[in-house]
Length: 199
Image: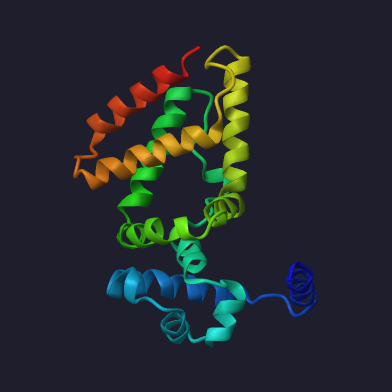
């Protein structure tokens, strides 16, 4: 089975390069349909029809609905856009604001319930998707934290993945509890996290 899967992947890699226009159309269609009909009713054939593609073309890119929705609502941010500066508080504030913007998106809000319900049934999938989509984010944040520790501006040994989990989880719970995620909330949460990072 494993050798068959690898040979299939090899054949795909030797074929024609993927058309990024189809990728973009499929991801855009997924977000639109999440807004219109929700996660439960969304299907790959519906996405394909909206994107002007065929279901096999979508399945070649995203073997499951989970993977398709995950990549559509959690796009990889360009490294240059990571809000990391020399100031730890400013970096945390920027990451919080970016998370609030992400999780406040209607498509993300709609997708989260379905993803949280189905991901546990696919052990290892969430970690694989996070590694593929956000690997560079983790690397850059870890470098920032390690440098801050070396400069005496933060405690040593802080794991970037745990920090991002803390930020993302805090924002998701605040939204679920209908908190007012205003400037006061951002500043208080920033202070709480920065105190935890203090040397």
